[in-house]
Image (cartoon, rainbow, N blue to C red; front, top):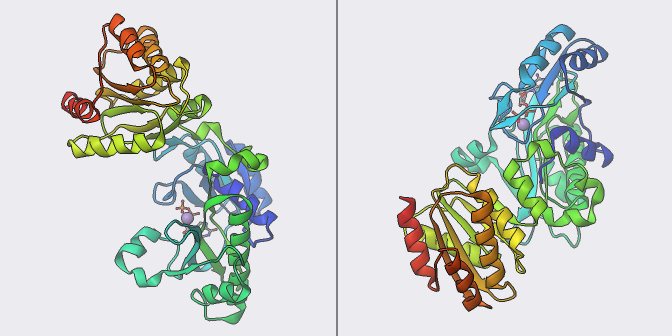
Length: 376
Ligand code: GDP
Ligand code: MN
């Protein structure tokens, strides 16, 4: 789950980090009032889950409260990466001297958090990583001990020469580690971490992603979810308890079990196709779940064929078959459907499908190959 910048900054502030002030407005008048409060000039920033807001025209500097209102009008309702802006964050303008990058994320290989810092912040960090990776410094953290003070100073010294700035930078880096660990984050990033012409280090941007598997035990963080920022398909899948990830291909996949879903996607690729999604209907699938899964898949206009791959262990094939028949009846789509069913109650399932004029095969290769052909 991604947090908005203003929400991430609240977590930063609660952890005692130096962050620039700012408040959210949902209309031009609200933005005007905030700019007046900050002495007239202000920066107005789109609150959407997307990087590169600056490049998209979603970050604008205003020299007067009236200009702040105009910027808010322009930014609210704007689309950035397919997301509609519904809120802006209004902050006083900072006098920027330097822009650095500081991030911490999960290092899957090292099985620990890893810090990445660079004195070349503000811009696309991916671009720095691609063109001169030596400008990015990494440090793996042993979670048993946490980030030690000397490590925080070591990282900050990659960003600044002036000891006064290093000390402040180390403070920010330590707080960022606390936010990352205490909120079950998979990523926490500041880009840019600025030093001002007055010699103050502070975060003026914030990006935090929470690991979805942490949310059940972190109700305060879970409450930060903004349903408006989620795609309809994602929201539907979450409510129905389906794991769903939209992809760009045209073979809609409906599979039980994450491992089998991954294997299915691999096989789709192997036969020259492109999966339209990852979708795991879960272990014990009742027919309603299957109907909901098909609603999600068929609402993607890119899908050209629907591929079912069910291995019945705990999942009963007859439940899935009932769901398929029910979905065809209720949704009434006319996409080709290819089905592989094997395992628990397989015979029963075949009977149910046959009655509805549908057939299932037992071979995974066969069904995937056919799906890829039909998608062409
Ligand atoms: P992003 O493009 O979505 O990452 O949004 P950022 O919050 O990082 O802002 C993009 C850029 O706008 C920053 O790198 C700064 O150069 C600039 N910017 C943001 N806030 C201020 C500010 O208060 N003063 C000045 N001078 N520039 C700012
Ligand atoms: Mn940024």
